[in-house]
Image (cartoon, rainbow, N blue to C red; front, side):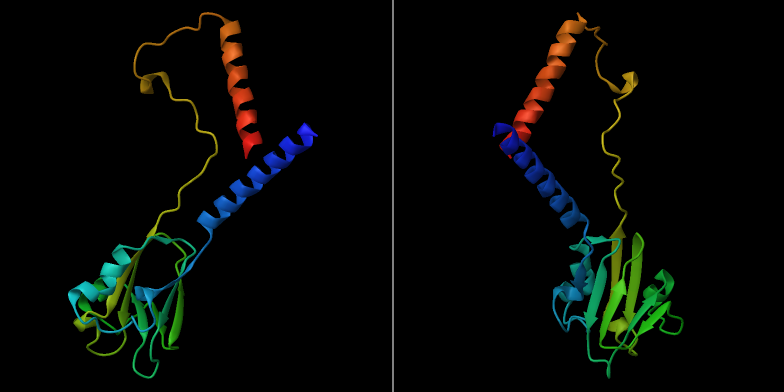
Length: 179
């Protein structure tokens, strides 16, 4: 019966680790500005969408959601230069649907401005910087001798080394059995 309990605990802990992995890597829908109606001329510098964007971490696969009155506004994805100059004449993408969903498909900056004349100049624009995904390789390789501080020490005997390794394995099995 103890074997069944420990295998069930091992299975439960494995499922928990898989759940945690997928919950951190799952793409999200992010409402721009954190609320409906944020795609508008800001009332002050502190209400700027760039202030909001600086405090938000964007990942590849996330989707930005902008909600606005489609009869009065639009969203343009533009180059860095067109963002700086509020140039609406040559957008990379143009959206006028009132509930725009923008897929962030690569790392780096994305530049968005309002397509309504004069709105960008009054601050209705945002830069979204998408983080570069981290690469996970599993187990890290051992450091090279040049990376280790201090002199190299030879093991005293293979029996001592073997006992230490068994102790680490036994502790790991014990720890997994507790979860």
